Length: 435
Image (cartoon, rainbow, N blue to C red; front, side, top):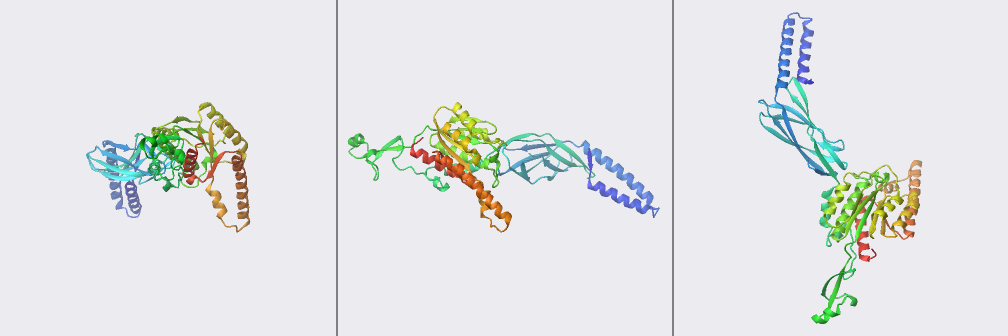
């Protein structure tokens, strides 16, 4: 249906005013009738001309993949096939989970040409999304009517974890630059398990490093240099339960965890290890450990649309599934948020996994808890909240200490420090040779 414009309403308002005056001044009646008939004829012709116009054609350029939480430009091209200039408003129907700046756009497009414009969009949720259509309000030639046109222009895009930030970290994730991220690489010269190369003796080398046969041949001291073992396997066990829905900043704990998985995967793959991933307490997904940088893309394609569920974590089932799926010894990293009620089930799962694997439990701590303790206690409700928070932390501490007393490798950290803490733990275990 056509939409009457403000210009048509103002014209009708004007003739209504003239009609009101005509009730007091009869000489205006003929003028009022003549003008009203003229407006009816002109607006009808204007409406007819609006529907006789040649259609508008629109193209949308959407990237096939978008990073989470980063502004990107969406480009549109509007083609005017008519012989006349056209004034129109363009509104793009973007997914509801995204935020935009720069819409709607009002354009005046000359005849037989096209106009390009763009708007900014930021994705606030990972997954697969559809841009279903473009809506246009097209003005008639005299501006009395608007035509509402919906063009079925569908584009699909996928929102991934912020791989731009991952690339930035990847540039730092080298032997020389890891320290800039707060990562401490403790391996000393000559230590390790796998033979790397022969080189000249350096001051500080242990006597056991000296290769006496090579020394006798070259008539100078030659040392053996070792490196950390390669070809080991790292498996992430990702809790997709309701606790990972917590949010301290723009990203949820779950999104922070995905970023940490991607970064540690990059570091581990550079070390020559294989990386795999399994999820539990929600949608179950599995990637068998593999080597090579293409593994990063496999992980991205597997987790980009993964969302935490409303389920509680079932550690025993997750451990049993992993023992069935994977027979070779691996370094298993359990990523979750521990509560005191998890102790018995989590310990059973860890003990089962430790029969074959080396296990590290990484527990996220909400920054909101720390913020509550920083608030001054002025009134009774403040005191009750503070006491309840301390009690919660005490229960949580007991659950964590049970893991440590059980001989389990475990760490607790806030989501924004998770990446650094995990990489430090991984490098320490690699250098110790216990895997």
